[in-house]
Image 1 (tube, rainbow, N blue to C red):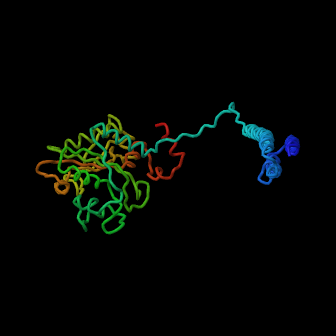
Image 2: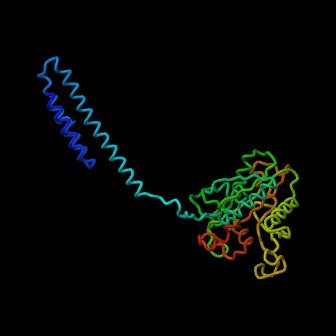
Image 3: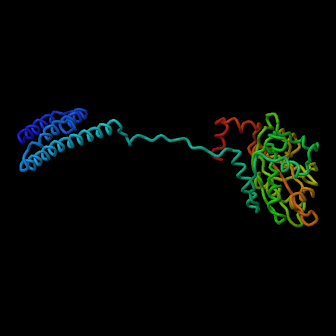
Length: 344
């Protein structure tokens, strides 16, 4: 049996020297070391050996197995190394080549203007308040002095989800929610940015979805002069120190008195041009003193406190600031248009 084992070792090592593929190597492993391999077949005859011969033959068998496994392991490592080398050669990266520069993005002009507006009012001591875009009729209309069937609701034709749920038509509901959350405490000084929705036909100056920023201040002895001073400070920071404003009487159900605010034309500086229809003024936002009923529904005593509110469209500000003639440019994703604002 010892001679058979030695012969098996020589035969196996000779065949292993001729192996040149991993598959051939695996086949020889099974042939000599598998459960039905040649070495196993020889060892099955150990039952006929004497007690003295068994350990000797067992040691020889272990040596033969170790010799064959050693060659197989070396061959496997050689195949793995060769595969790695081939892969490295096939996947060579020439680091001397110039890199491909990816185009960098930029802030959308509407977001840029909204951030600038927010920064101005934060600098004036305001905080930012936000609320849901899908709103209850109560917060969107009723708590703002617009009961059901009130004719002034027609000014904001709406997208209703149910009879009591709609897409908000302005960010004024956030003002109501803020007042209720304050539980009658003062001062209140917030701006409310966000998207709003109205059933408008898309044209050069209107869209069914647009962005608003509204403001609310409540405290003791808040006057119309405080509102005017705040808005003058805003337009001068937004459009330049030369900008001036004028207030024209208007009507909003949630403010009394109410006003439309004009700014001196950004194109002609107030001298008159086609943009301002030769008036020297451009309408920019609406405002007024908070209506006593709105204060009451918000949890405040109008005999003790007063307040003012204002609201502006971000698109309107952007149109004036950049001299754009069509609101639809903001939404068509035309890179020729958007790239103009990349470095502003």
